Length: 118
Image 1 (cartoon, rainbow, N blue to C red):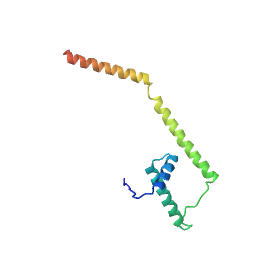
Image 2: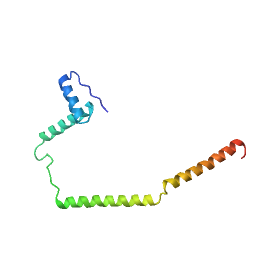
Image 3: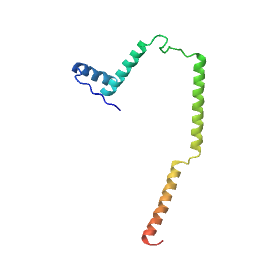
Image 4: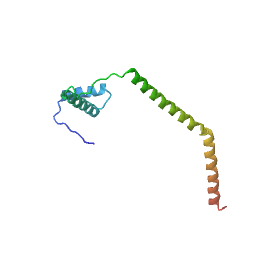
């Protein structure tokens, strides 16, 4: 990512920037990026003709209902998948008991091999 160094930055403006960044819960670098981005986008919008600007549109009731229906369907499918996954997974205590049993078998085999029993 490119770095930017500004020389001879006015101290009083830097102090204001520090306070402004803190108010917005950002570092000074983050605030500079956000501020520059905002200014560029505002200037870009101001220089466009009214036809080029994005018009403000209000969502119709039908569009809102369609969006909400789609969102509910996505959430329903996600809950369905989640319940299917949960039904196929054993309880954590059972998985832990199996893992410990497998570990103990391997440990016994290794101990026997080291002792020369195998």
